[in-house]
Image (cartoon, rainbow, N blue to C red):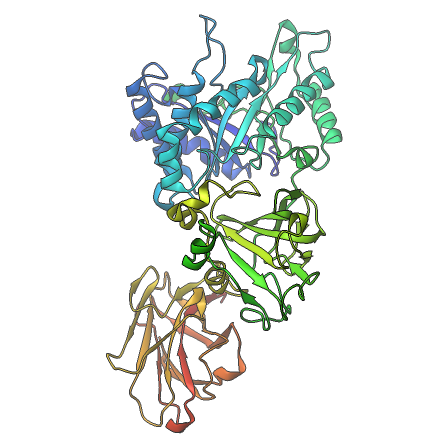
Length: 614
């Protein structure tokens, strides 16, 4: 096998072969070996969930059921090593009867069944499911358009929307151009131009407009196809990179991948094609999709940039799905209407900021009353995406395709199209990828609004900078058993809930000279070792100057005093201590030695244990 490019994606076909199920020991041994071979070589694997992953005629009722089940089993087994899977490669390839392998309606159904099997109930968030690859030689753009038409009106896709909140049952689309039978089968423009036409055809479709498109390989047409050597493919690589600077390519031998039987396990059965990730819509498709960092937290869209809470001097005239707004206008409001200091149009022209790092997916003017809109996509560290919209702007300072930082100015407060409103910012945070100017008839349905939009203030409080933890063990102050441990507290009367804290909530009580209230955090640590113990101190209801934490560790216990009033929404270290897998405790009480009449507040929020290298 030739050297593998670590930046490339290597195709690996998953099919049944001589076995009856991906749970068969022989099947698992065969594919475990192939996946290990590629992963150990440093090659990111691109899995192909072939139609013959299930027995029977593709498109039959029994085949649909088994294919979705088997595909989900394959993804579950290899999701930690294979992050991208192509679903039903070549659905529109022409069979011996002159028909597509799967009709558009059958392809739409298959995509829905697999997506729900893999991603329902929050599963598979790190897995990318790719629709296709669509053969461009067989009117690929038309075939996918028909698939979308069948899918959008189907109960299967509606079930996916309800189960996963995804507008379509795939995360990306793959296409497969044909190399023509010409004196030079690698006529460079003849290969690149169908890809461009495919992107153009898809750019206006809401379901796929922002989804990546993969060039999954090439059909080698005609007698000259056998002459498609690595050298010739390298020429095509250079040409595509010239047309689309910065794109990643991994062109390798055009050999089929995947074992047909257990005795064929060897590097020679592993092959790879080109995988070219590009992005829609067309303004982005003309070049590489820019690198967009995941967010490090969310701010508010208006007010001073050092803000801790909803900005001073600003108020929200209408919140999410409020009754008063419905009484006045007969529809349910989809976000917040931020008004600045002063009355009337006093806030006209004040700056509007990006709430988090992200990609501008739309920047345009909409009638009859929206005016200027900026729509952005944000990626959380978990891979989950959310969208923010800034509407009625006086000016737009960013364009589609721009990558912006948290706190970067994206526009100014305006009055909408034709000065339809008093100056304000209409602001939304969306749970789903929707068109920029989404409104009627959807906003007549309150549940639809609640299913597709976040309460922006609650969301922001839960996702402030510093709240994202990508390592360590975190135990929150939510009473009871949690994923990483448990929190218990005294059954006493003087506990108060706070809507400020790690992930938006915490508890507090009042400082005292004697102990009445206490709380204990007990983590489930994965291994013995040294850990940096840290506590989250929010910006509100944490005014004591003498909180006393007691850390129980492997060598005993340590008492650590913390002046909570000095900190604002940040992790504070209590020190590094040795721990076993059991017996770790952090305890905090209301006993600070401060006078009861001072009414100082002791906050009980999250505690985390970060492993420290020896």
